[in-house]
Length: 509
Image (tube, rainbow, N blue to C red; front, side):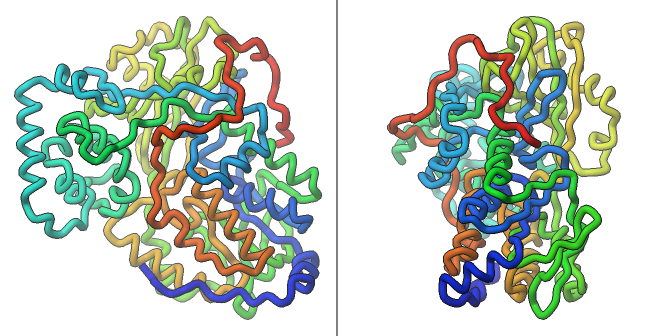
């Protein structure tokens, strides 16, 4: 990765800086967690800001869809963070609309359900003595042999947990998620997402004892009463109340550069004069829409960046919930679904009819492939068939379904991504008033809290004249859902939703 420090931002005295920031709005590209956080904080500072979002709904991958009163969390978003300033911001925006929810998830593997995190007796009973012995011997071999090169995800995982555990609990699910062999994924993804408390740390503790004092996964998490979309709608309402703008259905078409600065943003049929620009657009998109065009090597690097796309098929079924979990991971190669959510277990207010169940089957795909281009009706039929194949519910219980597609949901860590990002970053650092934030803005598999933290630092760079390197935010830290003993300032959800017919407190978008 390019180790060059970010360019010093040329600001004058605080009063002159503020006067300059009041002349032209800061234009924020993208209305996901990062973009809305930036817009909200700038509006709180009394600065002009315009947030531009291409879709009708806000939130990006963290949006909440609503169809016929049923709400769907796309991707599943637990509001848990180690960052106090992010947690304080969540509380500031939603206050008592947060619920404290129980955490439960399991793994469907080899037609069995494994507790997650793994428990030794459960694993031993379901794995069986033969497979357990093979896993143990494989782990011991990995522990004593030299590690060697660890370029690929397969090498990184196998070196730490043994080839057999990798094959049993990682290979099929990961390749289902990413659509490529694990040998083509960089070890950086594993290092960022799997180390510390992870499926494999739990497996190691279950098989070989908790020698590393790994903490248990959190047993509770915070969640907005009407899903994550309630957070983004409330934040947008506050931006507007404070004098800022949030424009939906307004895709950014061009970034106009002069003398090393973005001077205008073309969007929605007009050109917006920009003072500062904060972008959560995918790096590939930022390069494509900038005029004059970036250098050929930058454009070539951008074309090579890859993304994994995502779709959810939500099914409404007659009867009780199919399982009590928030979600279950499907480590089963015989079906294409990767994860299944139970929306009522996130919040009782997600499901308006207590006589119905509502689940979301998540499929990982590439834009333009057979899954992505399948009709909504065919996707509902596929999801219903796989639900029955897994033994969760008969197709006859499915009353209706809805399909929602999310492009560029996951930046891919393939073999060449690092060099490509470095080449794009070198070009970006020549632009004096543009900062990239968020998951796709930095081509890093951040969680929502980390994406919001990059936006916080970007605003500090603008308002305070600091020089935070946004590429370093969460470069080493990882998101551990570890159990922490703290006071939860949010009310707990009741057993039944006495207020289920109420609407979110702020939903101007």
